[in-house]
Every structure is written in structure tokens, then in C-alpha cells.
Amino acid sequence: MSERHTPHSIARRWSLLFLVLGCTALSPAAEHPRIRVGVESNSPPLSFIDPAEKPTGFTAELLAAMNGTGKVEVEIVASSWKYITEEFNAGRLDALANVIYTEERHVHMDFSIDHAFIHGVAYTRPDTPAIRRTADLAGKRIATLKGSLAHTHATAHPEWRTTIVLYPSWQTMLAAVVSKECDAALFLRPLVEEQPDSYGLHSEFVDDLIYQFRFAVHKGDAGTLERLNAALARVLHDGTFDQLYRKWLGPIEPHPVQAADLRPYAVPAVLVILLVLAIFGWQRHMLHRIARQAEALRESEARWKFALEGSGDGVWDWNLAAGTVLRSPRLKAMLGYAENEIGSAPEELHRLIHPEDLPGQRAALQAHLDGTRPVYAHEHRVQARDGRWLWQLDHGLVVSRDAAGRPLRMIGTHTDITERHASAAAREQMITSLQAALANVKTLSSLLPICSGCKKIRDDQGYWSQVETYIHQHTGTQFSHGMCPDCLRRYYPSYSEPPPDKS
Image (tube, rainbow, N blue to C red; front, side, top):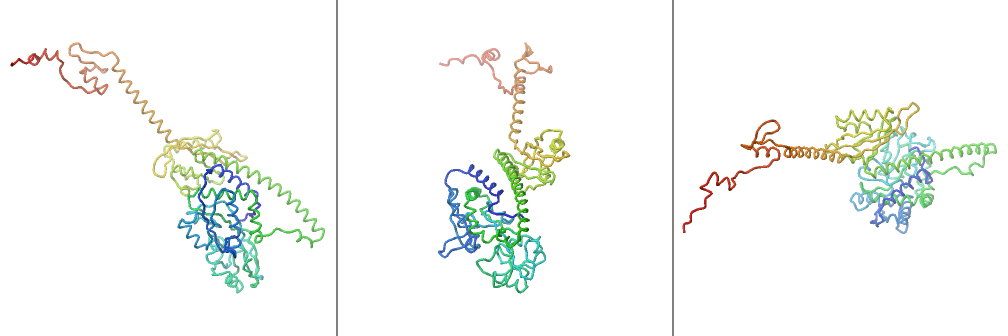
């Protein structure tokens, strides 16, 4: 929350540009259905209804600009927050605008990239210290508007150690500050339209209280989210976003120091300021250079992670110094687990490895961490969520070490090789069966000792058996007994003679 966001943020611009290029490459060319987006009708300057009864404000014009990119077709549905959330939950709206991310909402919503940033504002009495950071709220009674975003955000931060008091309107909130019932009133934005000057209160932007707004879609609606992100990034890249931001949000956001503010100072003070500006310019140049390098590294990592995910492998990133492992959603899905069912601790996955395979896996990993093996690679069984044992190829590499050679970071992949192992087992079984059959064939094709009198056959152990018994044991052939015509005439002549002619 302490980082200052502006529409000119270089890191955000390039990260969004990279995202739109990726989304554009993945999106099909076919037309998509219109996206119905719910927008609040009374939240200036973000969104409100103009005298012509049409939605206007920053969000309405931003959605119009997104329509013009050809990436998405949006229909605005403007009403109260209660109404549009009910319509969204009922499935009659595809998305909501100006939504702040919370863990509770993330259970049933997915979120776009940020599209607006607004600093929170605190109103205090002139005889009390101004509130410039959330740390200044500690121990104070703070008035908030019931059901507002400021109220929701404040209740989500118990670490502020403040007492939150709810009021039905902004007037009652400011009156509570004037009467000393509360120490300050917390708002999402300055009350420019409401003109609260008659209360004689002092307003101050809270530097580290920044509300980040996004579009929210239904959980799992990746197609809608992708198109919104692609259109947002295109609007940011072509400069339209900056124009809309200056028009609607610039007037209520903190302003940089202007040159006119320095005119009253004497020449020595101007020289000092110029020196400071020169140092600041050099520092900014260095920070800009570092930011470019960091962004290039992030883009490079994003590309290789995207490539690995696209190949069907799961990706993991182990920060050994912090003792945490970042695992990709694909890696967890391979084992049948949801995103939140496997944490970031290293042992989260080790406990799923088959006990017979775990010692070998640990030994292979430690050998690579110690530097005795150039890469880490091990095949082992991992238990899936449904209880099945799946064969996995775990492959990784230490990418950074400290001056003493201790590993700091390691990245790698998980590949499902269950089918390969099943095929190998089937192949071994087939070879065994063929070898047994071949042995039987060789037995029958070799020289067989047979008695010239009773016609019994001697086997490899020296036992004599009837011919049909021997063949049955070696081939599985079944026999039925009868008598040929020659033997019938020899042993049973009466049956072999033709019957007398009774004519």
C-alpha cells in the first residue's frame, strides 16, 4: 500500500503491454458475445448519471474506449451497487466495474488488471494533527459511511488498530468529527461535488491508502477476463487511458509541486533546489534503468513460465532464503488439487511423495544443492487428491547462490510420466509372455525320446508320460479319444463288417 501509483507508471505500462500481446496471441479471431458490465450510478467521478440520464464518468468513458479497440463489445448497465451485485450474482451480468479485490470476493470472482487508483481522504478538525498515513489512525475513532468501499476496506485491516463508527450519510460523518464524537472521517475520495466547506474541516490524502479498482468476472470465466484485459492494455498503450485519467481522476488526486510555488524563495534557496533536482534526476535515471532491467527480467521469467505451462508441465519457484515455494496452478491441477489446497511451504509436496521414493528424491535434491550434481532430476510417485499414485519427473536447477556458494533460488518443473511407466510395465509383461511362449515352442521342436512300444514320451526330468499328456502340458491342447477305421477292424471286427442284406 505504500507504493505511489500514477497513470504514468512505467512498470505498470510495460507489464500491461506484455499481457495484451500474450492475450492477443492466444485469443481466437472469432467474434465474442457482448459483455454486460454493471456500473454504479452514483459514484462520481468514477461513474454517475448525467442530466441526460446517460452513464458518464471515468469508467463509462473507459468502457467506451475499450469498445473502440475491437477487442471487446461492452454493454453498460448502470444502477445502485446493491442492484448490480444482485444481477451479477444471478448471472444476468457478466462483469462488475470498480471492484476492490478482497480474499472473500476472490472465492467467487476473478479480477482483471487494475484500471484505476484513488487515494483515500481523511477529514479532521483544524486543531488536531492531520492523518497522512494509516499509521496515524491508530487509537482513533474513525467515521465511515455504512456499506461504502471505505468502510469495507477499513474493516479488512485490523492492524490499523482503530475504532470504526458507521454513519448513514457524509453529512452525519462530518458532523460527528466537528462534535468530537469521532477523530476523523474516512472517504474514498475528496468531497468535491458535495462541497463540505461549511463544516470547517481539514482534508488530507492518506499516502499509503490507495484503492485499486478492477473489473470482476464470474469465477472461472477466463474468456471474458482475457478480452477485458486485452482491451484495457490496448487503451493504456495508445494513450487514451492517460487522457481519461487526467480528465476525471487527476483533479481529485494529489498534485505535484508546481514551479510557481517556488517563486517566493530567494536565489540561494533556488540554487539549493536546483542541486536537489539534479541529484534527484540522476537518482531517477538510475532507478529508471534498474526498473527497465527488472521489468526485462520479469518479462523473461513470464515468457519461460508461459512456455512451460503451455507444454503441460507444472512450474515451481523455490526461494530458499525465505523458505517458500511458488507453485503454478497447472502443477496443483495435475494432482487434482485446487489453487488454495497446496500452500507455499516446501514440505507441502514432500508429504505426498511415496515413502519408498522419498529417500532417493531427497538425496538427489541435496546432491544438486551441494553442487555435486549439475542438475536435479528424479522420478518418483506422488499421491493425487483421489488417492492414486502418479509418476512424476521432477526437474530443477539452482539459478542463484550467495558469495559463499549457498543456494538462494531454484526453479524447476513437474512432468506427469504415469502413462510412460504404465507402457513400460506393459511392455515388460509382453516380453515375459513372449519368452515363455517361445520356451514352450522350443521344447516341442527339439528331439523327443518316445517309446516304440507304448508310445510314451520322456520329459526333461526323466519321467515318462502319455503323448497327449505331454503335449497338453506344453501347449494347453485338449484331446478327445476315438478309434480310426483300421483299429476298429483290427480290434472289433464284428462292428466293422457291413450289416447283412435283409432283402
